[in-house]
Length: 79
Image (tube, rainbow, N blue to C red; front, side):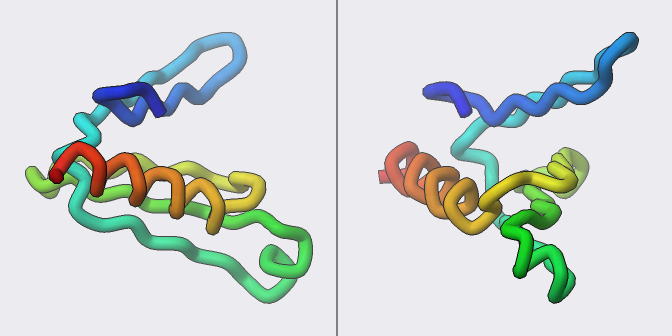
């Protein structure tokens, strides 16, 4: 999370990076199975206003905390 963007980079040898403006984020979904909740990780789907940009962050540790931080950043940008 930067001051203006959410940036997600995946890959080891070949990398793929997705960037969306913080203020364009309209929805954040958290998917966790029971064992993922127990182990403290899950998958976040972040949706932009355009409906085209969806960033999926798989197997993120402490996803609820990340979601809270991202929501704070979005609220800060919109106010």
